[in-house]
Image (tube, rainbow, N blue to C red; front, top):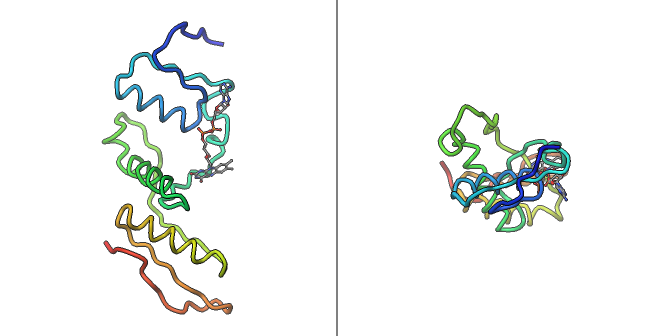
Length: 142
Ligand SMILES: Cc1cc2nc3c(=O)[nH]c(=O)nc-3n(C[C@H](O)[C@H](O)[C@H](O)COP(=O)(O)OP(=O)(O)OC[C@H]3O[C@@H](n4cnc5c(N)ncnc54)[C@H](O)[C@@H]3O)c2cc1C
């Protein structure tokens, strides 16, 4: 195990995506000596097992705002983070299928997500035979 510094200005426990992000932002704000402590190895938890889907809308507005801000960082990685690294981000769109009970919640979340970045989000209803009954644009076009 490497020697840990005896003092630090900021100590972050956990080398998942949140800990790594915190370390990055503290360092960027020149918050002093930042130490990230990980008990196994970096991304050894769920972060390393993530399917890496970047969603822009969630049921909680706070998550929609933060996820959308994170998506912008992925989109502009070179400008924001710099260096030669490439997160492999690709904008491929997303299809979510919901049953009748969940559809209203999904539509509400899609509308909120669309408001947060003015991106086209469409909610379409299908009948039990799979026919699309008609499209309804939740918000915004580009
Ligand atoms: C199979 C799977 C697929 C997923 N797919 C997606 C996806 O497509 N899109 C998405 O947005 N999210 C996805 N998620 C969720 C996402 O991966 C997690 O929400 C996110 O990685 C959590 O990050 P975290 O930094 O909060 O925690 P973690 O990744 O759990 O990191 C915490 C770290 O802290 C360390 N730690 C814990 N206790 C201590 C301690 N006492 N001392 C030192 N270190 C400690 C752990 O070893 C771990 O490395 C997925 C999750 C899983 C499991």
